[in-house]
Length: 330
Length: 132
Image (cartoon, rainbow over all chains, first blue to last red; front, side, top):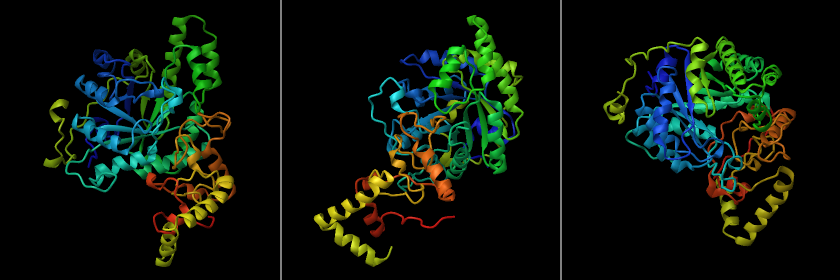
């Protein structure tokens, strides 16, 4: 029996290798830009992440952007961070998201506010990501709010969590994943892989614990446009691991166009290598502000055509839980 | 906790001066030694006696994704990541299994109250003693 009935869940459940994209909502009210970006994803990926004020920079809310993406014919994965909301606001947003037709939710702690454009802000961090996962699961499976109060129609979300296979303390990262699984994560999206052997080591530790059977692991891939971007990731984004080989390759190219080509080439290589690792259920392409490259990456990595979403015979929707946004999805 | 302990906690909590003394005694021990942040819902016994509430994001279940390669915090590069310290100490003290416990969401009403009295009053779980 499916938990949420989202396309992402159906595909993963059917054993298909999924591809997720990522879109940054606009830093304005420009909703047309979302509709435009949908064309980069439709038919090329199975679902798209909508970031929630990523790197603590104010953007259109992930909830509203998810709605527009849905209208554009692409399945959204709404991201939700613990930085900007307390448990009340998060629960009310989850109810609203489900009512609008959002079925996938990625639960994150969120980048610290000092890295964004409002560094003076007070961070909320009422819950941490693990507790957020727990809360969403409780809402879905037990039909209760965090307080224990019951609700009539529950939000049936496919719950995602994040994992960083490269961060210190390395051994703790596997334990942390186990905690997220216990809390109720259905799928895991990882930090971008720039060091395949390190990712392989983490995956083998995950497989040793049998966790690849309990949760769908979707590996992150990030194409970079220039050596500057790659070095920025290495030096300014803590918890990232970048293979020296990629830096050397990018460094050797001075031409802008050629550097972009090399960046795409590296990303495709990573995608092909990572997809061969046992236990990896899919890829998550996260080109920061470079969404237009997604179709090319998917094509060059040999991941086209995308599989058909299986019919949902097993999803027993009771009359009460009939998705409110059902008409929208058709 | 037993009825008696609840009565003791109630007795102390009803008397402001006594209550202040008890809180002061707790702070004297826990602040300098464990870096206690006075959350009132102490989980030090699960986190290798290292207070997780000093983490800028107040993560009670594990580190965020931003621990630096040298084990420092992404927000305050001059400090160690709390969870990096917790993991290191838990390994040394053979308390790794205790890190595995899912810590439920913090009850913010308990902030700046005495965790010891809260244990006695039965408001929070007692500490978990003993190694693996």
